[in-house]
Length: 571
Image (cartoon, rainbow, N blue to C red; front, side):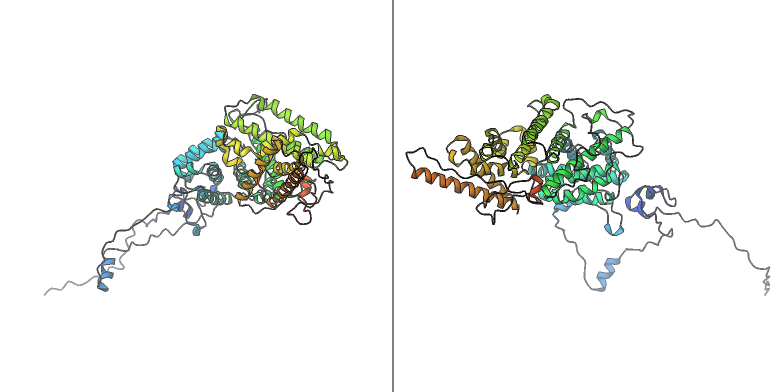
């Protein structure tokens, strides 16, 4: 047998092929948000989102076979796995249009809104919310809405915050029937859910530290509806924060941005003033927000949004007439006059009356004279201006100086008494106006404390004229209004005050009627001594300087009138 010897020719060289290249994966934030990653370090998306760009290991774990896994497990236990039908009923959470990503990752995504829900909220916002709180530029926001149609992932945090707050404010202004027709839950549940998402979106947009105009727009919208939803404490506290973030004169700002920031600043000024009154706080004389003549920027222009665009080099001229900005300007003008009345303490009573009359004429000539009666927004503007202007008159007559003699103090204008009746009786009248139905959500929150307090005070001193038609109408309106306060469920000191005034007025009326029976056949009448105006108290009562009523029945120790911290307000 021939054996071939083995010849060792040295070590066998290794055959080196092409190196194994592992394909880099997308970074974790891009993978979570399901967007394309450029795989830079850091990637462009993470730079834009301001998040940490972290990449997973490029080594892919081998897939484990799942075949026969459940069958083997069942065989080991001697049990056969069958099939069972699942009964599942969708919950309101499933119907809720938003959905955030897993919060455990620390990267909550923007709110997810179904397209038809977003379109519905946007339509409602343009007709019910934007005319009242004019801080958003509609054409620019329309572009964001169209951008959202392509995907929410491409929206910035500021844009997501604005859309979330727009949806929250829209739902708040919708009727129960409208919400039930478009969504699968009730209005209280919808408002609660949308509000939570709006708060989360604002937090992700860093509203506490940013000065981005879009985030501030969303913030101001949110604060406005905090007031409308009877949360003056929240609006009062956060408006002070927002005003420090919103500077009306931003460096190197374009004319377009300057105008939008003026809108923001003045609306914050208005919110701060009204929320301060609601909360029962004194306005600091050192605050620019409390003094209409101290370092305040110019008022926003009375123009429509279509006259403003980002590339403009010069702003249009403001002119009399009705525009999309007119309602907000009306409220600001009246608030400035009210602020001037409080500042101008040394002026005479008659001079302050002239200031109120001048404000009323200016509002009418500049804005209201151009409004008809067929558009619901025109009707609302006339109604709100009528109420706010006469609120100044109620405050003025309730703080008349002690130097007024008794007869002069007793003779409050009958016209103001009739106006108070009209305002207190407004909810009944609003139900008869087709134009008012659109604004029921707004007007129903106004519980008319000041007009009702003035009306009851007058009734205390008009017991001798209880047979007149005006006094009878006043009693009817006052009793219905008291029922609204009780049904509102608010645990307010104001309710106790109004109950005391109502009890006092009813007691005086009863005494007068008893006196009439005892003096049957005579022309004698029962009269009551007028209350002296007391020194104005500090704190809440100093806001309106309401007088002390001598020991009204039902109030201990003749409590001073004051505004409760949670008193709801109009606009």
